[in-house]
Image 1 (cartoon, rainbow, N blue to C red):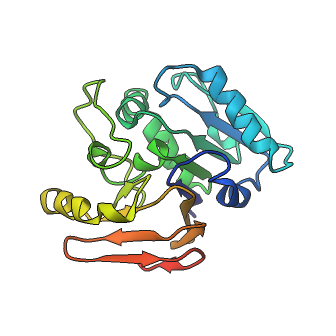
Image 2 (image 1 turned 90 degrees about the vertical axis):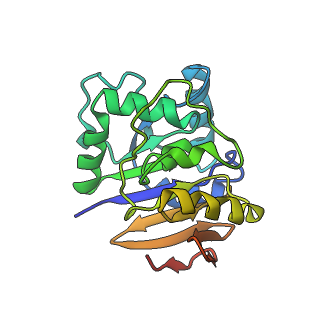
Length: 222
């Protein structure tokens, strides 16, 4: 039985408070901040600890920055993959073989939280990071941009804003892949083959010719 996915559209700890409250029903988290652009991972850890402290939760955290380090993922209730540069993140995950470990962890019932870049890599392809708000640059020369594809062949877009629909539809005409567009302050919760909007804003399902908004606490039929 597969586990849970939390795909966050991004934002600061105040913006993500409502969806983090849903996620933080775990005791032990493996925190992976390697997408962060300047490699200041100690600052990332302080931010993560501060975020959790706002929820009055007692949670054990281990930060992992070397994906080649021997780690038993089954020792953790959840894996939190933070934001930053999506291409850098996926390159490190693929080169270390950590993508297969993540898929196995999820398929065995584990929970994965992807924030921004961490969410994009769980979709079909991360080329979508090259358009719209918070555009990424492929500075690492990643050739294979295919993601872990845990969301039924959809691309995932984060930091989405309503005025970006046409740009995404133009992208779909070229890629032939539909998009789940997630704004800051919200997330897509995937559990038991159901797709639920959590947070404070609607999530938009975009195809080449249409876009459909789903309000918080509603399920997306995909």
